[in-house]
Image (tube, rainbow, N blue to C red; front, side, top):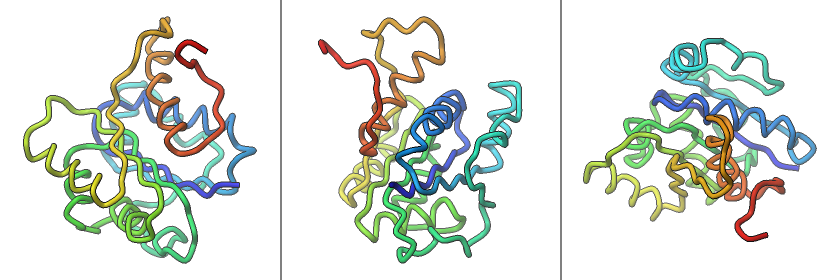
Length: 185
């Protein structure tokens, strides 16, 4: 049983968060707790891009971005994985530089200091040297950078299936037993 934090940052790419939420519901037998934090821009982008507020309808524990009194704000809570999907470059930079100015950055800082699994899913492009250097810092600190770059060998038929190719990789990296398309299997 896993204890997982999912943060949704403010970059475009709400479809990735939605597909991740959908898949986490199907994997609920593998989780003890799923805590969710959404930035204000994440909520706004979801409403613009997906034309709904369905992010409130999933069976997860939701936390305010300014609440530092939640379990995973401390390493003693033993949340083993954090996924930030999508992750803006500003959020990635704050994490890389150790700026814990909200619950998302504090939780990421805790995950890194406890040597647990942090997966960041940047959706922006192209990357500047600053972006790449920040990704290098996070990688050297033990984090995983998993860009939102869909694959097409599974022949996705719509945007959700294309987004699922990224989400399936995220779930693989997070250690979930997730049935999905496998190359040549």
